[in-house]
Image (cartoon, rainbow, N blue to C red; front, side):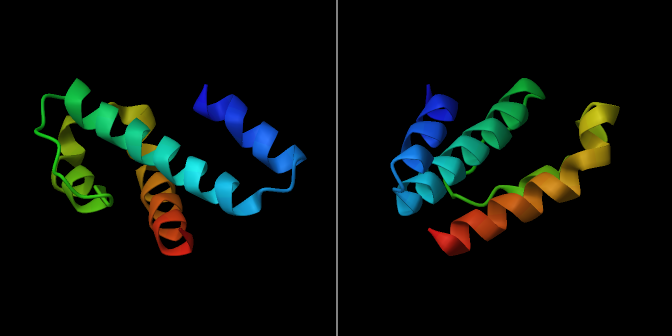
Length: 80
């Protein structure tokens, strides 16, 4: 639903809502990854440090793109 909402907000030129929803979407995705590998999810928006700390537990496909996900999450947090 959140992903579809991004397109709705963009089509209606609600760009601040696009940024907010995108940030929440990326944050929830990264927190789901932490839960999937059995790591307690911190109660902060930026979970990049926690993901880096547990990099060895991540599947190889995610390790290859982790830096990009963490960077995008941080950019969206700052923009929000």
